[in-house]
Length: 533
Image (cartoon, rainbow, N blue to C red; front, side, top):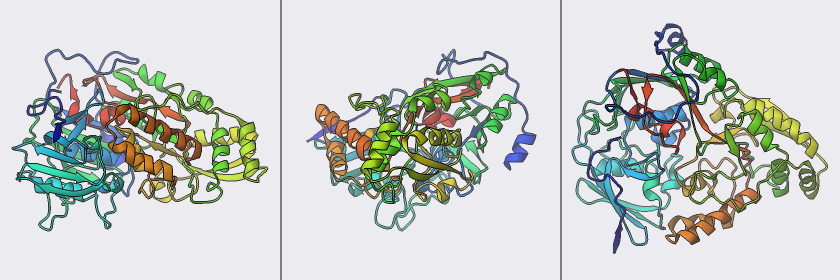
């Protein structure tokens, strides 16, 4: 017995250099127009227009960036995967999962077997047809003992992947997973060609997505040209070509936008957002999303292996102050879990943790301590004004008996040399479309990106049970308990959720944006267009 999970639109098309040389030599784009905060998405008059060269200035990148979809570690890399590749599924602006390379799918009644019917007539950029073998190789890239993929935890429950003809793939899971199609929308799962031995040929950068990669200079830039054979031309991939430029410095990023050197940027400096919104030809956009700023403690290292020390650290931060000072109110309070009200199973019943130095001292005393010196590593690579936030945290924590020394780290190499290497550091998480996605990726025992190195038996038990639970009320209860366990026992300090605040030139147009990842789910090159193209 099977139950169909055929999404709306199945079976039919959807509507919907060096950095210095770049900054010195890019021509200014003249665009007049309105200023200030604008509504998300613009009404279409006669539909999107095709043409033009789109340049996006992005905040997160590194010279160690790779094209391997199993090692995507920042926004730059994820945008490349979404631009060159095509995933089986996609998350829309309502948070629902929609078909993409998979035209439709269905599951067994217990959600342990998923059958995906692939779109016919799709080819890679070199003209070769996309088949079930390529899908199998793309998924298997993240499976097995030898894989180095950070998506390994997501695929850990997969027992078998086989084909039924050239355009049908059947995935069998060891445990039920009601959200499995959501997970395949991730930047980890673009479809690339299979090698003769069944491994994945990601090195050729031969995708089947909207654009071809024409150059890639890690930590600097990537350029793309439109795929003339993309099956959604006329509905997507409106730009003739596009360019992704790494602008990790916030001031440089915003200046590039104001002077017309780029058409859009992410992570606007909230301290100057009002001034940016008044710039000629610029508009600022904002949407609540799942991005949260964090200070992960390694629970496998002293002193954070003591739950009372972890609680002391959590009570020593003034979240209201960080929301007001660092985010300028453009966000919401965090409660030491990655789940907020944008998720289906957010638990509003867990009391909001507040700034309480006396309780911090109480937990230090329970740990046998009167005071505690700590080192907090931070860089603005973690999030905008992460160093300022860390310094503020250190000042607040003094009243709770914590003597925090902020260690400022370089932006380049931060994710390799500091994050998950030092006992305590600043970080950010973009969230995932589902609770299970972020829990599995960041908090399941042994996960490659479990940056707190946390291992809670009850949490891990509930994680598996909730993943396959089809009774929605019972599933909600499980996710409530998981949020509570993480809030009380985890090594996560998540003081605030940040709204997605980005900015564009007035010529840039788009439909209502998705909030599963920053800036329209990082599909802006595929989904957006120029009004005056």
